[in-house]
Structure formats: structure tokens, C-alpha cells
Length: 170
Image (cartoon, rainbow, N blue to C red):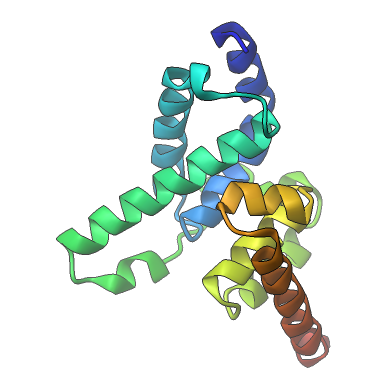
């Protein structure tokens, strides 16, 4: 793949990539913007490393996830204030959230709240499958996990959400 082809591919993926970056950054919009910017640079620098084993989307989502994890580790080492990532600010005026863009803002808020009750790994797998329309196999590639492990997280996460949904319905 040439640099120009990758640039076009990344431009087409921007909206979903930002949604994935938000998930990887625990819904911190500023951190997600920073992670996505760094991921774009890394992807363009590593264009020769894309060998076609995965789709460009899966490949780039892996870069976004790894970038977010690296920044999180660095921040946690530098600071003992682990509560910082728990603070969530509303979306700035004029910049619609991914849920609003898809027309499911209320459902998105409910699911996000429920997703926060899941383990980190279950949350990642379910986000990739449900929000980003990846298969479980593609999610395994993005997360760099064995397919069996990914399927187990997927099944357990869905089961937990099923148990929680009746509790929150009016």
C-alpha cells in the first residue's frame, strides 16, 4: 500500500477511528484527539509495515489501541492520581458525539454506562464488535489476543450486559 492510498484510507476511517480512540481513552475527548493524532503519524511512518494480513481498519485500530495504552502507562507512572481518567466532560458545543451522529444518543449513554461495569478486556471486545462493526476475529487481531480468548471475553461481556439490561429498563 502506498502512502497516498493509506492517507485516503485513514481519511475514510476518521469518524470510526475517533470513536475507537474515545473508547481506548475512557471517553476522554482531549486524550482521544492526542492519541489519534499520534496514531496517524505512526501509521504513515509505518506504511511499509502494513503487509495486508489484516484490513487497514484492523491494522490502524491496533495502532490506536497501542498508542492509547502507551500514553496511559506513561501517565500512570508519572502521576499517582488514578482518578483523573474517571472524570468525563460533556461533548463541546458544536462537536457531536459519535452516538449523536448515529442517531442513538440515549441508547449510547445507557450502553456506555453499562459497558463501564464490564472488565476492560470485555469492554474493548464489545466496543469493536458492536460500535465498530468488526468481527470477533478482527477484534482479536486489533487487541492482539488469541481468538479463543477474544470469544470468551465477547461471550462473557454479552452475558453480563443481558443480565444488567432488565435492571435499567423503566
